[in-house]
Amino acid sequence: NAGVMQNPRHLVRRRGQEARLRCSPMKGHSHVYWYRQLPEEGLKFMVYLQKENIIDESGMPKERFSAEFPKEGPSILRIQQVVRGDSAAYFCASSPSRIGVGGENTEAFFGQGTRLTVV
Amino acid sequence: AQSVTQLDSQVPVFEEAPVELRCNYSSSVSVYLFWYVQYPNQGLQLLLKYLSGSTLVKGINGFEAEFNKSQTSFHLRKPSVHISDTAEYFCAVSPLNTDKLIFGTGTRLQVFP
Figure (cartoon, each protein chain N blue to C red):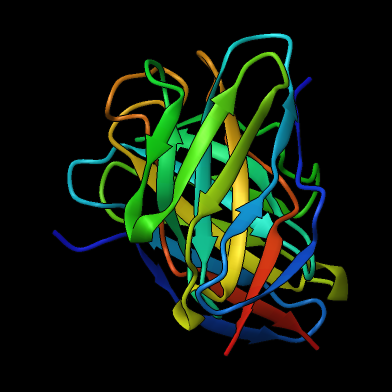
């Protein structure tokens, strides 16, 4: 059972370009979370999705950022018109059930992240 | 609102010495508690978690943590560290019936020979 797969591992974009980050959850996981890690900081929650639905996007910036988790295929985090402040590591996590519900399935499995550099 | 405080941003320690990484949290509701480890340029790996039951939780790589409800703490310990334990350690809480993991800012453990 492969782990959470994120690609690309490293992404360089010029200011104003679009960045697309992909996340394939673990097999059997229908819950996906995106986190952003800025240098010297902890991870900050961005968005929680289930298949075809955005459940909680309270951590997403209001503009330029969007996320989806289609019925088929990976989850996508899209950043339009990137700026230097978007440079960070973006981590995806998946779980078999909602985190915080309880039971042995209360665990998020993290991918290795995509390191976005805006030049 | 919930928050997690990791008071020590860096902890240097010699190999084979014991170590404690501190974590305190604030929450008006019950939470689940987690410790994750992040090796350089890697994702996060779960070390251990507390959901309920015994307050002393044992995890991978010889780590353990103790949940103290009265002090709202979940400190991570290891009796004897190895060079390979050098990494960033994150404490996190998940309030019951929510969908979030709330992370502390991390503690960088550096083990010297």
